[in-house]
Length: 185
Image 1 (tube, helix red, strand yellow):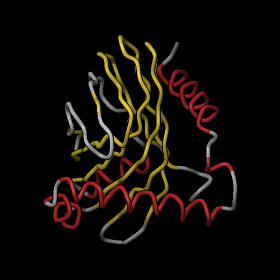
Image 2 (spheres, rainbow, N blue to C red):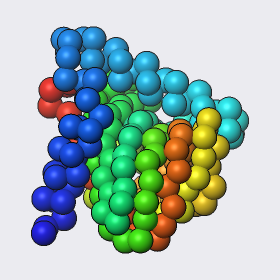
Image 3 (cartoon, rainbow, N blue to C red):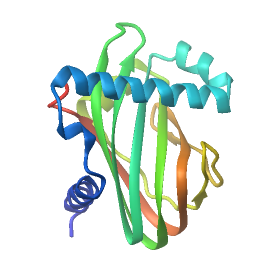
Image 4 (cartoon, one colour):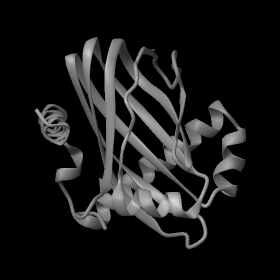
């Protein structure tokens, strides 16, 4: 199965399992819901590491995502978020999907913060999206705590992850895909 088909299947399964709250209401209400969730996520990151607030403020831009997922050998997760340009103050609503395969089991929710080092990195992220690298995953946590790798690096950006709740244990190949949400922009 091709990777993009795997991501699509994982996103559909997750949407059916989670009763996607974004399927109801009008565009403005959905945007407000995403903005509220991303602001809450930012506050959690700032509480965990106060230096991130200055890094976000100085950066050309940043993106914040909330995700929920399930895994049993094969896993999938999906979520919504915002890419924000600090210069223009413009928000671009984005979607994300994650897929994994390996020895793993669990349910999890997480928040991802991406801080862009360059304006071009932000522009490329918004225009082209990303397909994240392959890596392992061992996470456990509740109430915002996390064990395991908490930060990563993409070309032109740093990414950070907080576990919301649940537990996910195992060794797996993982990838993430980000794209502009046409329904919310």
